[in-house]
Every structure is written in structure tokens, then in C-alpha cells.
Length: 270
Ligand SMILES: NC(=O)c1ccc[n+]([C@@H]2O[C@H](COP(=O)([O-])OP(=O)(O)OC[C@H]3O[C@@H](n4cnc5c(N)ncnc54)[C@H](O)[C@@H]3O)[C@@H](O)[C@H]2O)c1
Image (cartoon, rainbow, N blue to C red; front, side, top):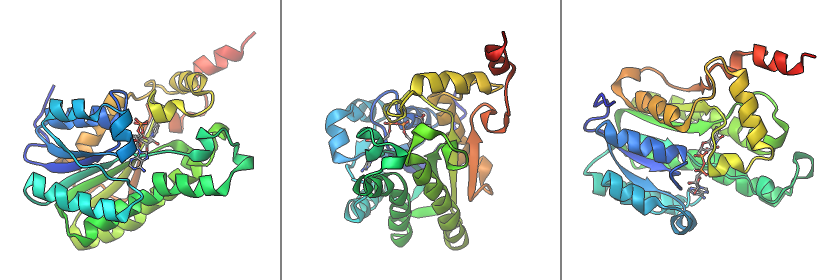
């Protein structure tokens, strides 16, 4: 179902790797809602992923950019404005990667070069993206910027490892930059704290399959899917949420406010 909520709006979408990616579903949904956009991902992901297929489907251009490189991001912002024919209304940051997780290093055995790299990719990149947009005065008034996060920023999930710290930093950047973007440019900045979702990044977390089932049983509405997240993001890019900013918005079927569910109690009964 389409409501034409994003008719005439132009944006940049980071992080579509394959059809499971939250950013992929979001791109399809934005397209259906009348929005146009440039797709971007790290040059290496271009080779591994299927982003060309998404570009074709949505009539979009692709501009590669490593989100840790200010030079790449400045170029992306300039090119996106050229391609889209003006300033930008929405930006989705859907980027995450922990080298410690990838290399099987526990939280109590971090290799700090890995930690720094993962933080740069997953958290500082959000500041870099916004600084490039801000300095180029690339955002239209009442534009909207969203990054994706996870509840491990507030509560401990042992196998989420150093990504928990990266997400806490990411959420803080949304508040801090949200202040300046709001004051100077009337642009809003929020993070969506999404349920565990079966994607390449999600499945990198140890014990993911058990954990996603646990979260589903704990949430009164069940886990939010990638498509649910795409739908929610569209509302945040639309003109219906103009005064929502500097928020971390839980999108998790009620998980974050549930102490325990009946299903979990029953699984412990004799
Ligand atoms: N999957 C989950 O369970 C879950 C839950 C909550 C939040 N999130 C967040 O959602 C976002 C999207 O992840 P996803 O689950 O769709 O997984 P995904 O693996 O499909 O997407 C992660 C993306 O990050 C990109 N990326 C990595 N390094 C990059 C770099 N240097 N520059 C630019 N892009 C880079 C990858 O190429 C990939 O497209 C991430 O921030 C993730 O932490 C995921």
C-alpha cells in the first residue's frame, strides 16, 4: 500500500548490501512512496552485494563511498545534489561492522585496532556524514536524517560485544548533531532502535538464531521485521513527523519495556 508520503522528496541511502538489508527494504519502500534517491555503499560492498539490481529496480544512481572517508563523503554529497537536481530531504545511515566480532574476539579480549576501526565505521561515520551535509548546506529545511541502532546501547547483551559501545556513541551523536542541525537548518536527526533482524550484519552476532527467537517471544507484538523498519523510517522522512528530533525511537514490538513474557515464563515451568 502506498500513501505517496515522500512525493517529490530526494535523499541518500547508505547500507543496502542485499535483499535482506534493512536499507534495501527501505529503498524499495521509499521508491513506492514517491521518493527518489542516490544509493551508496563502501566500494568493497559494491563487489560483494547486489546493489545494481536495486538501483535498476528503483531508477537510482549509485555513488560509492567509504563512510569513514571524509573525502568520499564530500564527493558523495556533491554528486547526490547534482544527480537529484538540488538539496536533499532525507538520509538513511544503515551501517554497522565490528572487526572484533568478525574476528571472534570477546568483549574482554578486544584488539584495540579492531575496536577503533569498528567505531569509525559504525559510529563516527554518522558524525562524518552529517558534517559533510552540514558544511555543504546540502539539506533542505524540514529534512530528516535517521540512523539505525540497537538496544544494547542501553542494556547489556554479552555477545553484541563492542557494537554496544558503538551504538551508544551513535545515539549520542544523533542528539548532539540534532541540536545544531535543528537550530541552524531546521533538520531533524533521530535513531531507530530496531529488533534483531536476519541480515548479514545481524547474523554476525554469536548465537543470533536463538537470540532472535527469544526477542520474538519477549515482544508483545513480536519482532519488528526489516519491512516494518522500512515503513517506520518512511514516516520519519515524511512531513508528518516534523517536530520529532534528537530521539532514540524504539521499534521492537514492545521488547524494550517488557520485563518478562508469559512464553518465557512457560519455558521455565516444570
Ligand atoms: N540486523 C539487526 O539485527 C539489527 C538490529 C538493530 C540495528 N541494526 C542496524 O541496522 C543497520 C543496517 O544493518 P543490516 O542489519 O541491514 O545489515 P547489512 O549487513 O545488510 O548492512 C550493513 C551495511 O553496512 C555497510 N558498510 C560496512 N562498512 C561500511 C563502510 N566503511 N562504508 C559504508 N558502508 C559500510 C555494509 O556494506 C552493509 O551494506 C546497522 O547499523 C545495524 O547495526 C541491525
